[in-house]
Length: 150
Image (cartoon, rainbow, N blue to C red; front, top):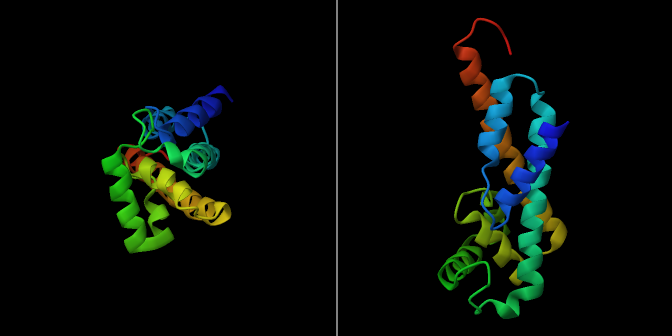
C-alpha cells in the first residue's frame, strides 16, 4: 500500500511545477513485479490529474499575478501556451502530460477560464492514456526477456 501512496505523491508533484518522475517510479514498481498494473495506472492518473487541477486553480485565481517573478509559469511559456489554446482549443489539454509544456498548458487553461469539468475530462484522459502506454510498454519489454508471464 505504501508503494501506491508513493506513486500518488510522485504523480501529483510531477504534474505541478515541482520536480517529480512518476514514470520512473511506475516502471520500478512494475519491474519489481509486486504490484498489479491496474491500481498503479489508476493511482498515477488520479495523482497526476489532481496535480494539474492545482495548476488550473493557480491560473484561475492568481492570473492577475502572472507578470510577477514568482508566478509558476514564465511569460514566454505563458504566451506560447496561450497561442496554442487560441489555435487548437481545449483539445490541447490532451497533451497536458508532455514534459516542460504540459504544466503551463494547465495553468493557462485556468487563466482562460476553461470550464472545470471539461478541463478534468481532457486532462484525465490524456494522463490515463500516457500511463497506460508506459505501463503496457514496460510490461511488454519486461516479458520479452522472460518466458514466464508477469
